[in-house]
Length: 324
Image (tube, one colour):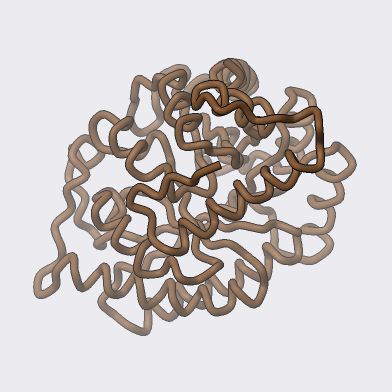
């Protein structure tokens, strides 16, 4: 089976090759699985053989209100609804003690759930090298937390220029650099800072997945440039958030999906907390199938509706879209 490379860099090509090589090995060992030569039929077999795994972000139940929604309760809800796992938002954790982290890990294990993703916040778009170092140290600490909880991947941000968001920021994504600096300066800071973090991530076996999380990464050209500059590291990954594209998301999503290791899927039941978007997940699903994406999809329900009803509805909608 050939592997379409498109505009892949060497690291992305290697990762996709390994995924497909694993599938070919399984096919050779199982006489019941014979891949058809027709491309459309082949994609259908690949989709059915390696179904999308749906997980839920704890953020779906807590949008940074004063009182935190317990992660333990999210784990219980996820098991009851039918999710395959839970993404943990670092800021939602009650503490960082080993007993607490072991408790979460055991709860998930006993309910048959994976803990594949830890979402953290850091900002490398910072002219002050001392402050950038603080964000690097924060990331290194979170790598250790992920290891303790058995979480293989971490969500990373590029960061954004401090105090430069306009009233229509989420519509345009435009953010001007602070005086005396340029976006290229910021790109260099992100590459250098991520490079420092990747050294430790490689040792720990943790994937650092850079997200299109507004700020500098709103510009997809910048995001791709940063990713490719770091892609030689086996710990470098990419997370695509369906709701964080300026304007229509499908073109940029299709452009970046060949590099993606995990996807966050936004829903906005009851209207968005910050902004609202119409999302066609049947269309997203077609793009994912065409790219043979087989990783995790993490629900981020960001609407105002009570998550106790909005999260199950989101699950049913996403499950239907990715199973069609």
